Image 1 (tube, helix red, strand yellow):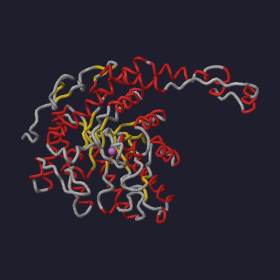
Image 2 (cartoon, rainbow, N blue to C red; image 1 turned 180 degrees about the vertical axis):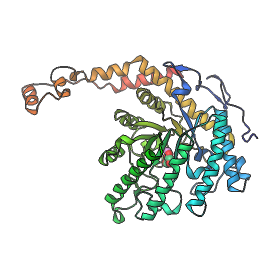
Image 3 (cartoon, rainbow, N blue to C red; image 1 turned 135 degrees about the vertical axis):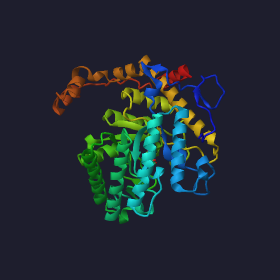
Image 4 (tube, rainbow, N blue to C red; image 1 turned 135 degrees about the horizontal axis):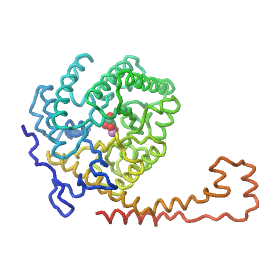
Length: 438
Ligand code: XUL
Ligand code: CO
């Protein structure tokens, strides 16, 4: 039964005025010998697309969806899975992501909840098999239920720690059951509101204990997917422990967990941390932990996580530059952790939002490939650091010098020659690359 009254979305080229078609995302087009669809491993976020209804702090939902007419929660859960299959097929998206609580209703006890989940996972598995849809990552929702008021792994209450552990155990099991390629830990309420009531040291140690138990369990059951941590600096707590890439890496190294995790970098989380998206991607990439991304964008004037669909070509160009330099993201991908605005309440807006994001990433991919092909930025950087290729610079790099030698080398020099950083020249190069592919 068709649920979404929209035809399959086709590539119709940049001159097209049809809002329900791709202008730039052409899955078959090859960039550096690889199909666009393989570079851009797009994923639909179950929670934003099939659960969000436009509710905000000031008003109830604005969106009425075809599955809302089902009153039995298990029937409704199945219809939403049908909608997921139809939606991804029509968009030509090969992956999706979900939280345990997105797909099945909670029961009175965890045992009952798990039973509901198992029934839905059986159905989902069957539908995925028929359609070829794949799971990019699964995760556990450790933040919505009031039991997580003080956090989950970092809660002051050991019963909550136990509950969260049991929930993650099950979430890893179902991710494995559905052949998930990754498993994400986003620290929903792992942070604090005030240090006056917080034992930060114990909370951080417990977070590490929790992650290490998860690593042990994955090994025990033979889950081969990549574990990812998703940094975010604030919201819902005032200070989230997984603040940004650098914080997460320092934390993992402090507890000897670094070889078990990579990062899932979200654009709007980067900007909330006061970084650009490409800063976070670069930091993760040079440290060998760029695993996957949550694609969205924030609003420059709003200090919260607005989770908008990405439409900023400049940002996606610089993001795809990092991703290409990373050799891609696989087994990670590009998950649209994005929701349509409360006022964009028509069903077709869900398609248009994803089309906008996919086209913007396709443009970013093309422009980034152009930047890499032209090589002007690489050449500039190579030249900028060329003083480290020979003489005293080479000795510094080779670890073949001392403070005494460096002093001796420089002490009588009258002048040091610096060269321009040429930021404006480089920004024009980026503009030219973007313009050339539009
Ligand atoms: C919240 C957020 C989450 C994670 C998964 O800001 O990004 O949806 O991506 O829990
Ligand atoms: Co996210």
